[in-house]
Length: 168
Image 1 (cartoon, one colour):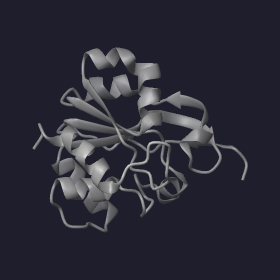
Image 2 (cartoon, helix red, strand yellow):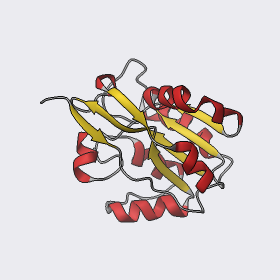
Image 3 (tube, one colour):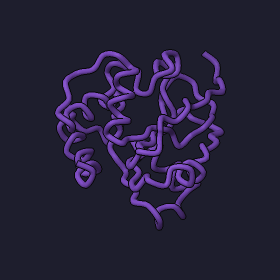
Image 4 (cartoon, helix red, strand yellow):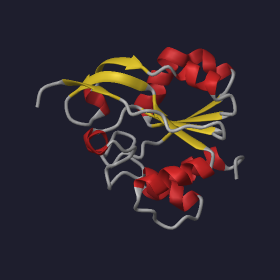
């Protein structure tokens, strides 16, 4: 498969949002489904459901409503890039999403969690000045693909829970 230009999904955010979770850019399965964390092996949804003691939700629209009710927004640090497959390591020519503008539009966002190293690196490259205004946490990736800093589900859960403690 050739290197092809891909684009992130639209943000899931509203005026109630207090926490913004930023991925790098969705993988192939997520892009095909037009769903955040659409790979059934990704730990994102299981982690959030566990943190909030929420039973499993199959329907994507109900998952989005769950996020909105918990005041959680989703987006990506990368707006477009070229990538073969789904690996962050294969990303080239990335262009950032307008995160500063999103934060200006939704001033209730108080914290940002970067889902994985690539998301955090891109955030720091383009938006390091925002770290003076808003708390930014680098979170272990929820990707199902083993990486250099792979953690167990329980290790990921422990770190992710810290982001949500103040929010309750």
